[in-house]
Amino acid sequence: MEQDAQLVQQCLQGDGSAWEELVRRHTRRIFNICYRFTGNRTEAEDLSQDVFLRVYRTLASYRSAHGGFATWMTSVTRNLLIDHYRRTKRDRVTDSLDDAMPVVENKESSGRRPDEQALLGELSAQVQAALTHLSPELREAVILRDLQQLEYSEIQTVLAVPEGTVKSRINRGRIELARILQQMGVRPS
Amino acid sequence: MNWTCEQTELLLTDYLDGLLPADEQRAFDLHVNSCARCTPLLSSVMHAMSSLRALPELETPPRLVYNILDSTLGPRETVSGWAAFLAWLKSLASPKFAYGAVSLAATFLMFVTVSGSVNWKKPKLADLAPSNIYRNTNRRVHLAYAAGTKYVSDLRVVYEIQSRLRQDNEVPTNRENTTPESNPTPGRTDGSGPASPRQQNRANDVSSQLQVLAEEVPLLSGKLSLVSSGRLDFMTSGKLGFVIGGKLGVR
Image (cartoon, rainbow over all chains, first blue to last red; front, side, top):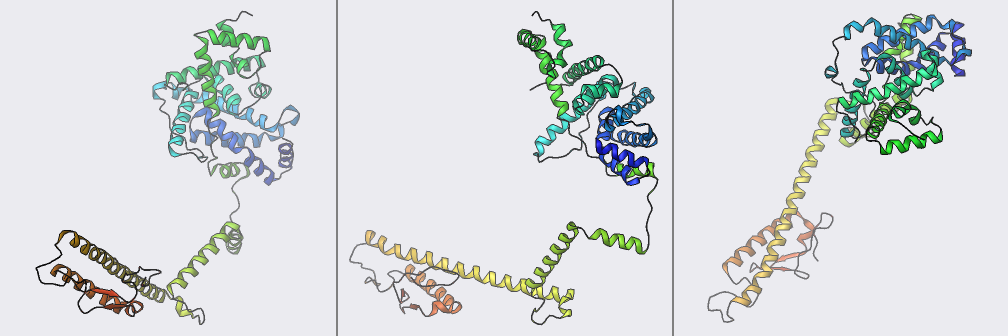
């Protein structure tokens, strides 16, 4: 975190390599948040690019006293994702659970057998499909807590809502996700 | 403490994240263990959470970082001419490239040595001509193939002889058991030669094959002798030894 703050200072002084380092450090995390929220790689790439563009333009407004750089970036990402969701809402009106045919993800193999990998890939795709059927406010809360492993206080900062609301959204998000997975036939073994 | 299903649903996340006070946690556990509605709810939410947390972190798309840098810092400067060549040379100075280059060179040297294309005492540039390498490799391969074929052929002869000798040794035993001692039919019965035309033919076959073998394998030629009657005798114990290290010997 301190290193991020230092890199931000260097960026503000016009150091291009410091910015490059910041981009390399955070691209994967931001891309993953965008992908889990949208469920679409191309959209996630475009949104990640937009996030960094906005961060670059508003870097001077970042104050380390208000939280870590990563949390601030996550807030920017969340705002862009919500904007994007509202913009594209009309296109998704016809979406239904039956249409959510999961696409198997291209993920790291981590030394697993092909059959295990295929099963895991299928489960991942189903979970991703279920995730995209949550309402955006529940989805972002679940992503930040269960995928990004953020603390409640950090989520509170990112979402700009009280801690009680954060807990409530995470709770409802998890129950709703379990219900959608059951509807899709994914049950605990 | 009296616990309800509504409380379970409301405080599920607190329970799962370990945020409930000890007495509430106990009440939660007691209720869930005995409630037909809350047990599946808890297990399905726990399953959903574990599935979420098992989602893999995706790799960054290869071009994404460059696209971000291009859109923020502007397109990078492209170098050309000598600067580009020097940059390319610099990129070659990596351990991965050096390892690959050394492996390739070692493989080439091994290939050239095995093919016999290069005489390392008097190396010539012409030895590295592709046509020379091809000709020498082709010759080596054919020689190796011929030697292999001959070796297999020799082995077949030896096995044949062994099997014939084994059959030959078994026949007198059978004859003793099945034929009367006074044999009215002509033929040798004193053990100095084959007693029947069948045995005679077999002995002739074996002797002719041994002659061939003796011509091909000089080591054997001095140790085997053929009796003029057609029956095989050996200078030593009368048994044919087996191939050791590709050579025939007599045991």
